[in-house]
Amino acid sequence: MIYFDNAATTIDKDKKVIEAITYALMNKNFANPSRGSYKLSQNALRKLIEIRMSLANFFESNDPKKVILTPNITYSLNIIIKSLFKKGDHVISSLAEHNSVLRPLYDFETRGGELSFIGIDDKFNLELDQIEKLIKENTKALVITAASNVSGKVTDLKKVYSICKKHKLKLIIDGAQLAGACDFSMEDFDDTIFAFTGHKALHGPQGTGGFIIKGDFDFEQVFSGGSGFDSFSKKQPHSLPDLFEPGTANLPSFIGLEAAIEVLKENKPYEKLDKLTRYLYENLKENKNLDFYTRLEKINAPIVSFNIKGFDANTISHILDLKYDICTRAGSHCAPLFHKRFGTKKRSIVRLSLSPYNTKEEIDYVVKAINEISIQK
Image 1 (cartoon, rainbow, N blue to C red):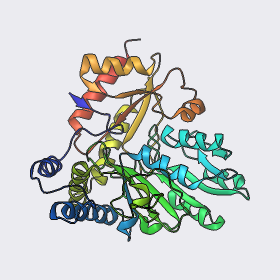
Image 2 (tube, rainbow, N blue to C red):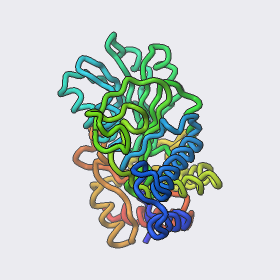
Image 3 (cartoon, rainbow, N blue to C red):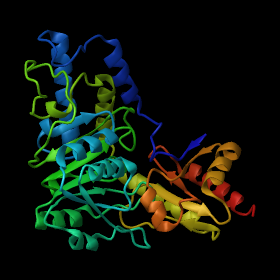
Image 4 (cartoon, rainbow, N blue to C red):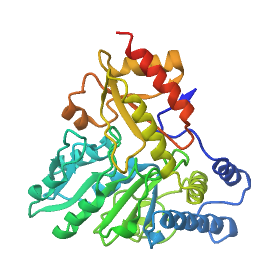
């Protein structure tokens, strides 16, 4: 089996990740964090602090207390959007967004918020020059993808940030496809929130994610529950990270994520991923029966999306699975505005997404399979 759906979730995990989770579950060393003064509870609390420190270090953030842990990036983006934006606020986003951004924004719109979207040009770049034209007196923030989960196009976040800084806007980044696949540093940003997920290019377990805060934000409570302290208060403690982390953390999985982060620190995969992505793209480009929804630039997420002329995407993906034992993603990729923009709502798109565990030999086999399918009509 060849797995080319890493933008959805990675299935290859370093043995250190597996060992860390197993250790956390089997050694009886971790109880409920911040729920007792005995050693096992303190061990768990200390480990959560270490996990935040590891994530802060990886993304070059200087305040581990502003590393919020969540079940996934969808939770992160919901929490951020629902906590920050109020009736009458205006938010700018883009046509490249995933439903993890779009649906919380649409919920915000039903509560009296205003939305505007910048477009995508024919080369799949976000039309960032439209941002300033859309800014109003009540504009509060930009919510934008770091890299499209369909095209793999990486957003020029420094340009976006410069616009936000000029107009005193907050920047919220959906880093689902960037974190672990391309280099990113919070040092380059202020008044910014970067949301990430653990189970994609970070190669951690499913059920892990979070967001990193840099700057001052006027957060409102979203969830509430047990916190382990200040129990007589009727409201969730407003301190970070407690405001956004009621209840018991998924400590074994986050211990696995910490191990995954440490593996990445030792051997960052960015150059290898870039070479594999270019190799895949350049070999597929020789086939004139393909329509592409990816255009490689200097920096890219490890994604190549295409269709075969005369086929719908689901048929291609189905054949690749049944005949060639290749796992790919076909469909709308939870990015409806992208498909409306490029007229692929009915036809859909096939997405190939790589990890450092993939090889050139696998790419050769996938390219051969796609070429064989493309001459069937």
